[in-house]
Length: 326
Image 1 (tube, rainbow, N blue to C red):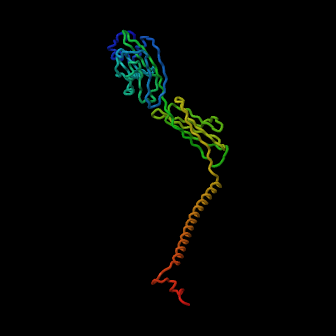
Image 2: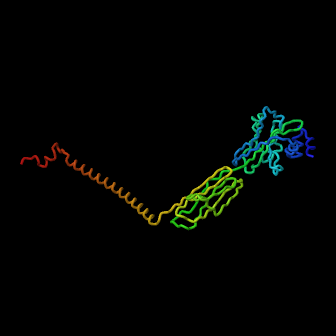
Image 3: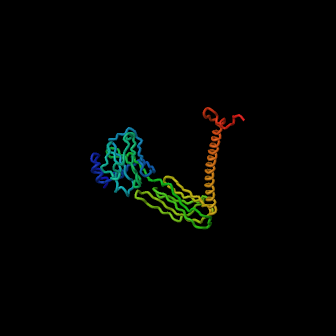
């Protein structure tokens, strides 16, 4: 039945009548039973990036006016929702049937088309773009013929933030007491693996709780709790793994002990002694300056008393009778 309908669709009226009749070009292409090699690729992109979906036909000197190129989502369950991602017909973009969510987000590389590169640039990818995409290149003949097909499986990922690890600060050694550690990280995709590690012997520890929280943008935050018996030397590591990006971020905790009471008093006494020494030094400096000042004044006065003064042209000493006859 499909073949009968397909035969009534001519090249000139194909984009209007046949697309509306079937809603999806691949229905006809499958009925033609054309055998072509299928190129398959898997790529990973980070959320928000631009990604290139590869579709390269090695034949040279192509006549674009004789070709149709369709990019579609290959998932059968999704074809009714979105039949066309991007279309090139007779050398011109024709996206009248393009799925609305791909509008203004797809581009072909125009300088590469004649060399057989029909790769598609998909802009600002989001978590909902994670599908398998199919590129179909069809050549105009008496019966339209598929000359090339390619599939690209697109997986989306996002790096998690540097984990934050918090734990108790011990006031004293209390072996056997249960203590709690918390570890959190966010804005990643897909869901992470969380590992707790005892760095003393590099053994795995079982978390008490792992909570993964979804966000509106499709990313996740993770919060994990670990409860363990305290030891005198606790070294704990929390590790957040994103398998898709092969990223492993970790945070470490090493037990820090507060000083005991006597130690605190000792520190306070040392502080007081330091302040006292500083004050004594200042007083000493002031004393030395005062002593030098007094010494300078005394020397000045003594020098002044030895000066010879003249009064009425005679030395003062003569007036005291020192040079008078006996």
